[in-house]
Length: 217
Image (cartoon, rainbow, N blue to C red; front, side):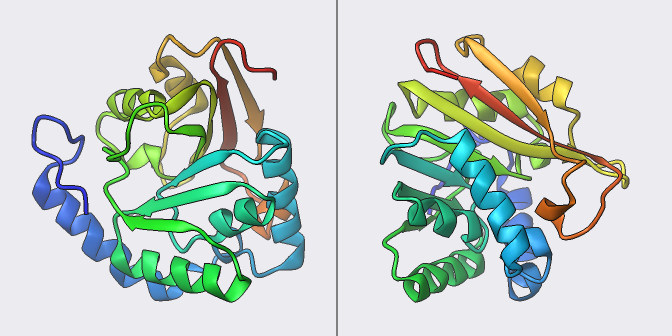
């Protein structure tokens, strides 16, 4: 477990403990949402196709930050990548490990604070994060930490949204918060792709792909 200090974490200890308890309680039912569990072949195929397009087509090291029950980790490992998944919730990680085992895949899962991952700099070729960044009080600080973990030709893949509840981040907010080191940034609208969500959606959902200089788009 990462034990980030007050000076390095975007979430204080009490809020981190509260978040861990919340997601531990949510873990049992988490995969009931179509885009969480990817139990529908149609939804799983839609996410598989997107990840194939966003990620390098060779075997690379990927960090799935805030991996939840590991559904995307399993997809990426199934595509031949070396995947590390981290999540604050031990209950989520337990399900992720079981899911990888059932799929016959080797994935390195850790209980860890995604706001302050404890890995050496320049460890990963890509970092994937889905529906997590909006939860952090200081997203720019978290993005800078993630960027430091990328290799020089790495990429950041962020799936986020601004939901009808009023929670979330607009795409422009994240683009503005990205470290200046990223030389190419693209935004892809996902609201108009119901296969990803198992239903039609009317809120703002999108992906941001940020590439380090020298990375082919």
